[in-house]
Image 1: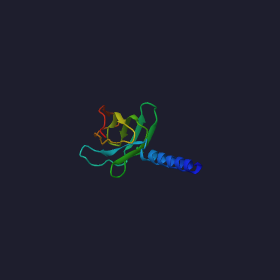
Image 2 (image 1 turned 60 degrees about the vertical axis):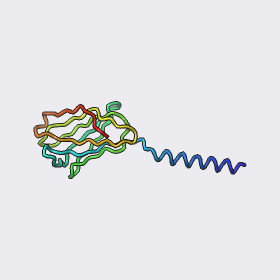
Image 3 (image 1 turned 90 degrees about the vertical axis):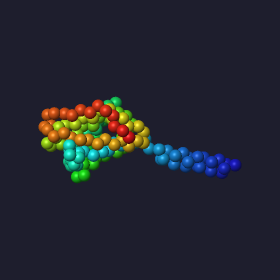
Image 4 (image 1 turned 45 degrees about the vertical axis):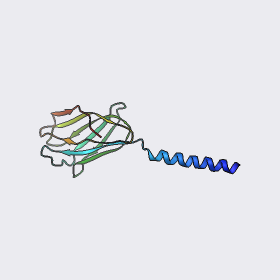
Length: 125
C-alpha cells in the first residue's frame, strides 16, 4: 500500500511539473525599426519601460532593423526609439498578456532628435 502512495505522489508531481512548464508566464515584444521608405534602420536605440513598476530594458536594432524584448512580465509598456538622423519615437499603451508575443513595428520620421513622434495606439498581438 505504501509503495502505491509513493508512485501516486511521484506521478502527480511529475504531471504537475510538466504542466507548469507548458505554460510560460513570460511575454515578449518584438518588431522592426524602419525609415519612411520602409528600409531597415540598424543600430537604433530602444528602451522599453513597464508603466506599473518603472522597470526598463534596453536593446538595439540589428543590421536587419529587427529587435526583441523577451522574457517580459505581463503588463502595459511604453517603447521609445531613437536613431541618428531621425526624430525620437514614443509608443505608449503596449499591452502584453501572459505567454503572448506582441509585434510592434516602428517607422521613424526624418528629422532631429529634438522632435518626438508619439503614438498612443495599442499594438496588436
